[in-house]
Length: 139
Length: 144
Image 1 (tube, helix red, strand yellow):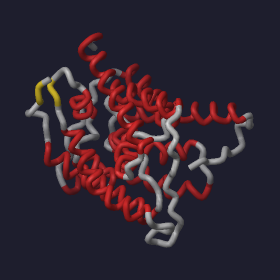
Image 2 (image 1 turned 60 degrees about the vertical axis):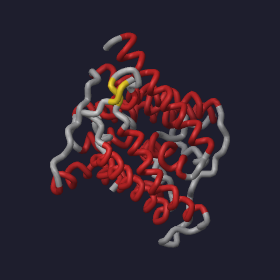
Image 3 (image 1 turned 30 degrees about the vertical axis):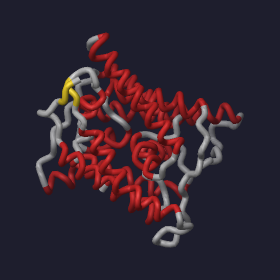
Image 4 (image 1 turned 180 degrees about the vertical axis):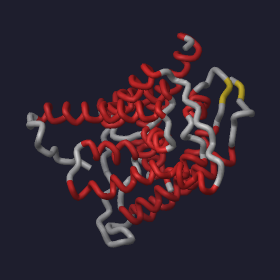
């Protein structure tokens, strides 16, 4: 359903995303409306979810509670924003576009996975653990 | 700055956004998790067996969406103007950036802001700002 929402909202096409991010050129506010629509529906749901310890199916709620705003968050977000501004793709739409058979999307996703892998390896090196071990998940 | 009325698609934007919102809400209430794509995909890069099934299911859903959608309506066009080297650099930045930043437009932008998380709001403003700045530099200063 998430994928269909992305398709309907036209956010799968980088041209639409870049149209939003281009403040100096012809400006396409669509992305803002997509966010607004999603948050309008999501906010009440999260309000309900926040009060629950179990999901509707009885499994544990695993909603993150991190509050710190640190250098990783800042630098990571900026890096993500730059990549987003360059190609007009963020993770979700890129995967959907790949499903639609777009070769450039495939390339993007491969590069993205490589970046994520690099992150994992760097994290393990920081923690001083060998490549085969699992690092504890802090979410 | 002038509005690009020809490209602006308010109804599909809001409706599509609402669908994303519903999907996110369901994911939270039924699966108990944040529908943050960078986290879901990122977790596939170092799987623990309990996590694998729902991550794969979610990603499969994203991949199959175009096929399913095409059965209902004509698929909207996908226009990718970036050249191959730019795509590679962009992909790497998004991969590394979303993991360090712990989220992307879905995780921080939709879910985090919906939960009124200051951390997510900051992240969202930062990546939006970076996005605006990058497009400005690329389109209006460097000019490619």
